[in-house]
Length: 302
Image (tube, rainbow, N blue to C red):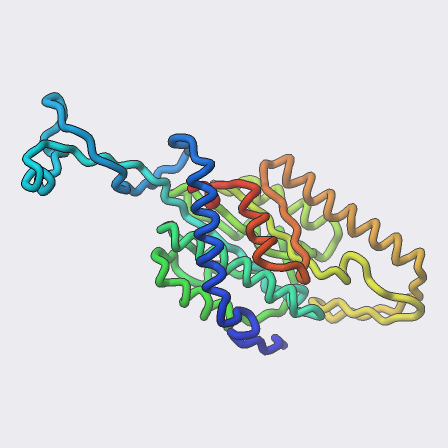
């Protein structure tokens, strides 16, 4: 059963204010780093006013700003720059392991999801929201405009968490549109039934149209469990229980296997030009979110 988390539990009263501050910091960083127009395979563009310049006889007279002419009695044309319009796809793992036994993973992952959505909406991009467990489900139609952030927050607050993670099926079922260049963010712990499941699923993601980012959210206990002696462990997704006698040596071996799992997943992503980023559920959200954006990508530079 899904634990009860209110909107205030997930997003405190100042969360949106901090997102606005983050967006402003990112915008200033883009302005400092931008060097002319960047090429892109995207097909969707919007036009934003940039400047004026004097009209020359060889130019199309329809480009003249007649209101400015009425004021100054001089001919000027308006200059525009083409701004890339992206389709931001945000896929959030809602299987049981993202909430039990560490509800902090759910909170951290949803903050990433809402922050990415806010950044996309404030940049006038289209944003689509999906959940995934046994399959991938589109939770909202594509949204555009900063005012729709409340729809995103309301939707994720009501999500029910549970069930198993079928990464290969989820990645196969997920079909982002090819009509507009996409930036895809998958937020998950990437825990499957078997250790190698996630690496196999990466092959499905490699075929998605657009730029793909994997954001892995984990709890520190999952990396370095504090266990000793006889314990009974339960699989939160399947309910399966097993008894073990755990020593410090076994804990050390487990930690090495977990590190190998993360390294193999990261290598598989790198080999297919997928950005892989890990965040712990106990780390400061704002710092980690900015760190994710500083790695680059269409959303951070558009």
